[in-house]
Length: 210
Image (cartoon, rainbow, N blue to C red; front, side, top):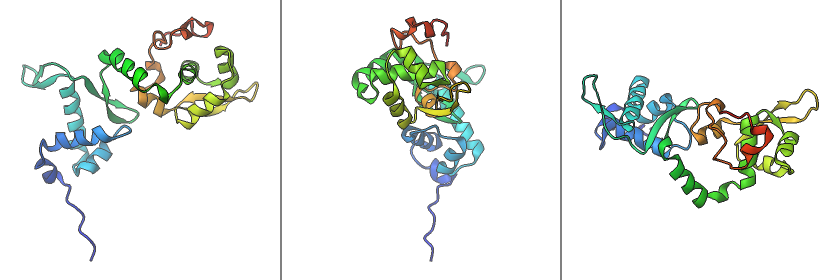
């Protein structure tokens, strides 16, 4: 006799503390990549429409809007985090207003994750993609072969064809790169200063506006 599949339907979600909203938050908190509405619906045992609704409700709640008011919403204090639709799914990120605080914490507490050389190389690729290793080396003034390999291994950049003139491999950033920054596209990249002081003074970056 086959074991019975656990019942994770709407009723079982609703009887848990906090109901469907709390259940959705629990999933979003542990996800290591954006969660699609379809996968959330499956995890919660609800229909796609219910999953989409709870995602939008949570986003409004995190942005500081609750029930009440003339339009059905009442503005209160927003949370320090927000729910964004990015890379085809939904994920919780820290709010941009706290970027300097979070950035300082990350740089001071987790700087071992990527070296300064890797961060600078990643910035060159992000702002000048598609770009070859030779061009990156020319911009940075050092050999970047090992650093580019590291970034490829980390899944932050990938090969994207070759230069017609030289046949050199071209590199671009990946969806994972956008996901880590909470961006929808490279057009949303901020100006390079003050994130990597010094690079913005290079001729290659004088016209960088995004």
